[in-house]
Picture (cartoon, rainbow, N blue to C red):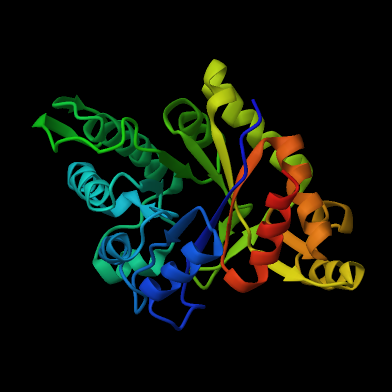
Length: 307
């Protein structure tokens, strides 16, 4: 099953403008979805901002890429999700991850537990939230949550899309089985500054990750949507120089992989469009999130003109 392309704009600190105004611009530019990240600090909080955006837009979907599920109660999260879906008229998509920034945990006074434990907690959260937003009244006895008679209403959408983002065999297999969208970022271990990451930008590694998702999804895999967060975007007529430059900066990245993987889009508009089409053909990745509205708009317009 070939999924149609979808394009999202993730609002980040790189945008000095009001995020509501950015959302209006993204909608006018033709983006399919406006996305908020989730990092404690001076940036706007995601759910409150998306509530405001839902009232300022009419057609663009809204979502999180991604919320840190490790610091949120799943019942409260499901309640907020259903509320946002109602406020937006059925346009909300919930993206969840396991958290990765130690400083944010320290700021909140929450223990930063090992990655495997955080990922297991994410799995419990996904299962609870899925059932609650579908309108179920549930009892749940998992590793992390023990719930009795939990109920939050249901989403406007018959099936609100749930994205799970992250890395690791167990996480990706669980996401394949329980999510509607699986988000890939090409990130590795958190670096010493507690925020930045090493990267694993190779076609072979992405092959392996997609197979991990497929193993968990089984027959459901054909209906899964795969998402990639574009980390580097540069529209240039000198692709060779741009690729050589980034390969010097990123350990292990080869020019061959830089022309293939979805996390690095370097080249002319047509070269980037060709790369996106190859990503969909090889890996089934059809949903791309970027952080630069103006640079990506001609790419988006061109790929849609080819349909």
